Length: 336
Image (cartoon, rainbow, N blue to C red; front, side, top):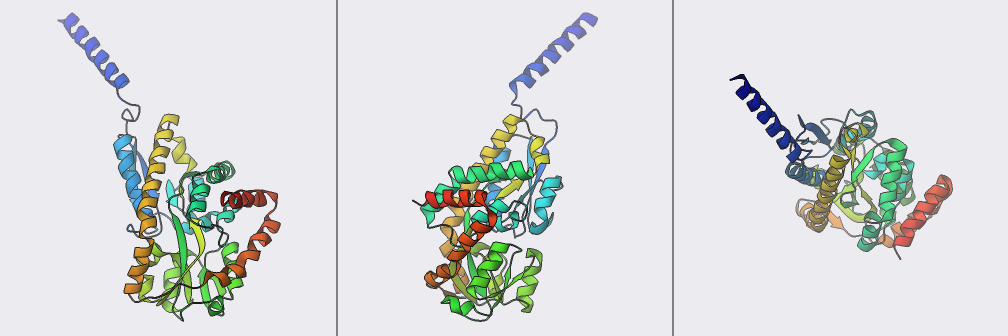
């Protein structure tokens, strides 16, 4: 009897060992690693599109190794605080607009410069080529933070409660909320406006109370935050065309094996492509929605705006030094 029990134990242990060897490394994880993905806007915004797709892909491909939780509406951090929290490991992942990455990684300002892109083909060459990869690598080495996906390009359109904008002279005297980013502050100053740096968390109240006259955002943010309810003028300026990459903490990424990291990064890349396909095709529809919901939409002649800010590009190059100039040269070369 004892011999039979011993043989059964041996066979049972052998079967368990064979199963463990046959199962993918992802499935063998004892418990899923929770990945809280945060962002400051509602779940219906562009960030939610990428986060939801990433959640789906990770579940399909990585078994129980990662449990993706979507945390919208600044519930785990504000965008202004998120980068430091990523570095400390108190936040797993967060969407942060490029202008809010810049205070922690100044080279990111290269993508914040006004009218830096010369069209969709130029954007694709920068985002899908060596320039974006180099920026992501430099970011990780300088700060420890991993860039998972650049996501969709978002043009910032200008909205205000005072008057329609058709020429740069129409901006004169407007109190404009801007992020705490020097490039953006100086851009609106060059337009003739009065830039007022405010944290994102303070922006909706400032717009509603009239503490500021207007601001700029991607069209999907204007829609999802319902800014059209109290700002009746929308100008399609496209003065800033930037990314809000999905970033991850070194603490979270360090808990994954190299194989798991590769699969996870591939999921993030595909989720970013899904977001681009979904979001970039919807920009004009969103602008039409805003027009149908009370905003007077104008399409100013961009020439006067471009002329007002082009000197800023060379000014920032001279201030930021050779590294900044080399990166700007690569971006300009990609337009050829």
